[in-house]
Image (cartoon, helix red, strand yellow):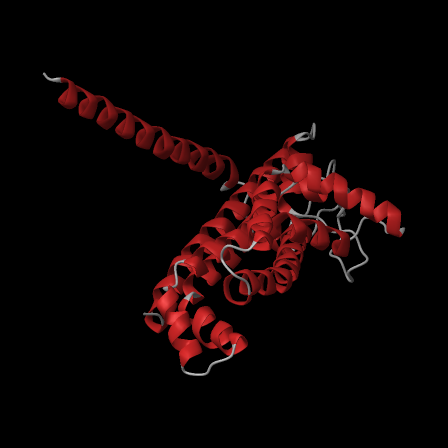
Length: 282
């Protein structure tokens, strides 16, 4: 066997082994959650709040954590989109590709992308103290929104960079303004990618625990306003798994199963949206 065939064989084996490890990990994690979570999952689990305390109470469910996760992630995603869309439009339409501002903007987003979520939580906590805020749903939305801004912005940016330059030049040559080019050409052509970026941010927001530990708090109740603390599914899993009571630990596995189903649904929805919106692009 010559050297080229040997190298091809080695890398073929490594790729197959990597694929098997990834698939095996997914199967093991899914199986553990299903085996532990299905026996505990019932109607009360998704329609009632915990009674007697989330750490010690044996009765009730995790409705507070389910709704809190949705409130937090949707609010954070909307907050992030309000900031990300103008940034992405500016660096791809209004500014030159070789501009230093564009370079440092992308560099800053890349750096923020790699910062651990616990650092964002600590930063959010400092801001809360400075503003005199208490742990609340609003503080969690802002903190998680800051966490997912680099994820959404960089994904949107890479998608917009794939639009042919000739398409923008054609719009300008027909007399379109930069704003018209951005909204009627760029956004339309990149709609599948923008939807995917939004769902990526939503999935990260709903599954993060570290950034909300100091800012959102935890409660057995459903938040009635942005100033109330809120429970989330990741924190419910974290706190309840450390409980000495078996029923509470089982409730944590039910929360893990529900969170997994939500993440799977978000991934499936992103694929459906990509397929549907792709009909509007070239």
